[in-house]
Length: 141
Image (tube, rainbow, N blue to C red; front, top):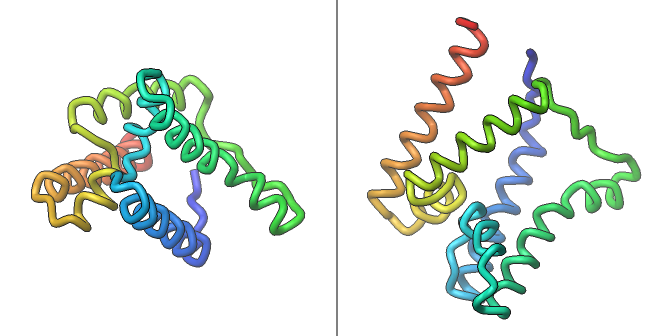
C-alpha cells in the first residue's frame, strides 16, 4: 500500500479547513467539530441549527463536485482497503469521538487554537494512535 505525497493539495486543504473553522466561529460563534455537526443532524429540535448543520455537511460533501468544476476531471475516490474495513473504521472512530468528547477537527484544529489543554491531550492521543495503527498495518500485519 503506497501513500501519495501531495504537499500542495494538502496545504490547500488545510487552509480551507482553517478558514472554515475561523469563519464558523466568527460568524456563528460555533466550533467546527465535524462529527458533532454531523451528529446534530439527527436532532430536529432547532430547525435553524439543523439548517446550519445541513449546509456545513453539504459543503463538505460537495468537495468532489467543486474539484470536477475546477479541473474538468473527476477526483479518484477509491480506497486501498475493502468496504468492510472502511465501515469498521468508521464505527471505531465514532466510538472514539464519543469517548474523546470530540473529533480531530474539533480538538485538533479548533481546540488547540483556543489553547485548550484537553484538546492538546486529545490530539496527542489521536496522533499517537494513528502512528501506531499505520506502523502495525504496514510493518506488522
